[in-house]
Amino acid sequence: MLRRWQVVFLISAGVFLALALAASWGGVFQPERGLYEAIAAGLSPAVVAVFWWINHLGSKWVLLPATGVLVFTLPRILRRRWWLWIAVMLVAPALEGLAKELVGRPRPEGLGMGFPSGHVTAAMAFFVMAAYLGEKSLASRRARSALWVVAALAIILVAIARVVLRAHWPLDTVGGAALGVACVAAAAWWNERHP
Image (cartoon, rainbow, N blue to C red):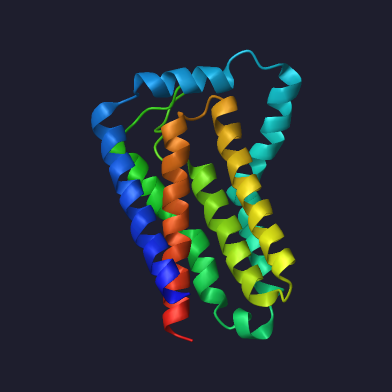
């Protein structure tokens, strides 16, 4: 288990750094513009409204309280490291904000910087952390697998929502996902190294 999280951290951190360099130096790539338009163009107002609600699954106003609930409903053995899991949810957005300033890539619409997506960073951090902790507390293999599927679905939907709402380019969401999983992988790696 320790090796798995070490590898996940190294790969996700490497992917994030590569994407940050690409976004910083290359701007918005033509294939990315095409994907953006394919996702965001021509949607009915009803579909956009659904994605507006889904978008909240990556909001700090939803995920910070959810982290508190998650941490304090864990089995006692997992709860003793409550500070580590809360730190993940504080460090991930801090790194995302710093990366936005360093990369300086504009959003497709509106003001502000776009890379990486903060909603996707937070969603990835929370849902991967929830699946990791759930995996440690659930006995059923089927339940653990279902938890990972639900986590992946929530993250994908938040990423799509950010593009549908024209808040981010697709690369911004992938960068946010890589940063979020790197934060959780670092915490899980540390947690496994110090049983």
